[in-house]
Length: 189
Image 1 (cartoon, rainbow, N blue to C red):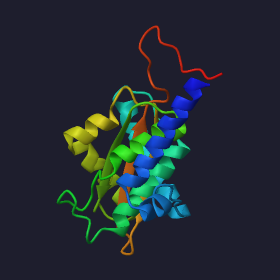
Image 2 (tube, one colour; image 1 turned 180 degrees about the horizontal axis):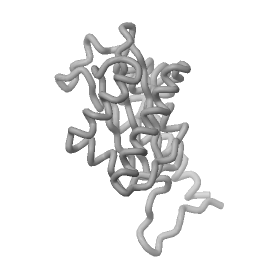
Image 3 (spheres, one colour; image 1 turned 180 degrees about the vertical axis):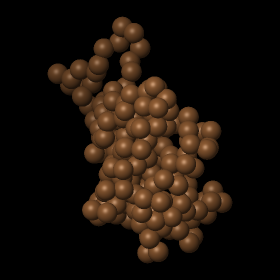
Image 4 (cartoon, rainbow, N blue to C red; image 1 turned 135 degrees about the vertical axis):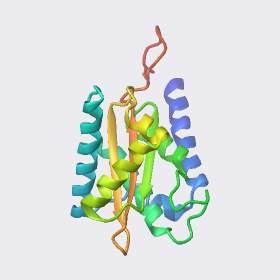
């Protein structure tokens, strides 16, 4: 019972931290966004291209994770909605709020480590998808994330703004937290 209460408190604290670190409208409208059919098609294509790239580099494909996709859509929606005044890091795009997204993915979906790539400004439609992937490949940090051996699942979120420009977020994660040798999963009674 005590362990169950501790875990409940940790989850509640994480969720409250998520809310306190972001505006309530962000949590309500952007964290778990839905995409339209065109955006969903582009998301699937992006994951397919990333998996083809991983295969070319001798790595297994990433499995689609619906929960990560919803979270990624939320951030892409946030970036697209704030494209004229989103200068928190001096750029049009940002990893702003990543710790909250990561913590939410871990707590809500039972995932381990989480990483993120973001992109925008590569055009519309399939051209935008190919451009974003090319940009990620040419960036050492983004490329390292795409080719991370530890990643098992992924979610891609794409949002087209009023001009059709695509905003990308791709989340990568480990399915289960890796526990130290000899430590079993948390059990509740």
